[in-house]
Length: 355
Image (cartoon, rainbow, N blue to C red; front, side):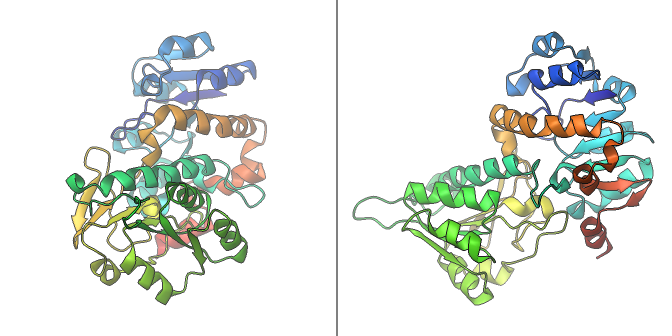
């Protein structure tokens, strides 16, 4: 199959879908790989490395889209990229269509098959989403710690505190890959951490992360009280393919302490906090009701080399499966198909867009 990898054009998005060694695996399997010149530069992979791996380097995205049957990229296509798609293309990337109805309609009109990384499912797991969620969870604490600094409008608080000082309170909604990693990093810093999750197994796992971790079921009254006391609030709620439920209302945000910080990792799926809106790394934050909000929709893009390596590792086997005979019928791949023949075929995406 002819596989195309364009350069990412989302604001400050430095990832590339595959590292050169992964490209070499695809070439070894008999595929042609076309990559846009400069696509790996921000991740530390120069064009020469891809050429040595057997890829054909092309100038400009238009040439990649023209030559390829399968378009593999990291983030959802932006308008210029959508225009380059044509019937018969297979698009394989993060899509998050529940929060992007206009994009869903444009992809339907293009007649492409659109497969979302975040809805590829196998054994009850989301293997292509997991490493990016891991990174986003860890980054949420790194970024939140910095945003709490006074010069960012934060409370001027160190999360872990010092002898004779208070510790910061971190509240995390969700204990999956993103939430669990956020809990682990915040606990290691010495913060007081409260995490909410619906299942006892997850609560037990979080509780074992340290004596400074309190793990609770997501009762509305308990969330409301915890949010009121939070210095740093992390939203990490995921329902695969669907819009994130709003667990924190505007009224609750208004009762937070001035200078506290919200980071909503769920922003890709619409956010689980009512005051969340999408931002980018050019203008990552805004202040609403005295609270610093961070809503960047491509958080792992801040660490493109680490994120590229992690994504490429899990993505390569699924590209090989997709490009094998009958690949679209592979059960894990089939779970990931959001759009086929102009129709929304993923149930959760269809329900979110219908609502």
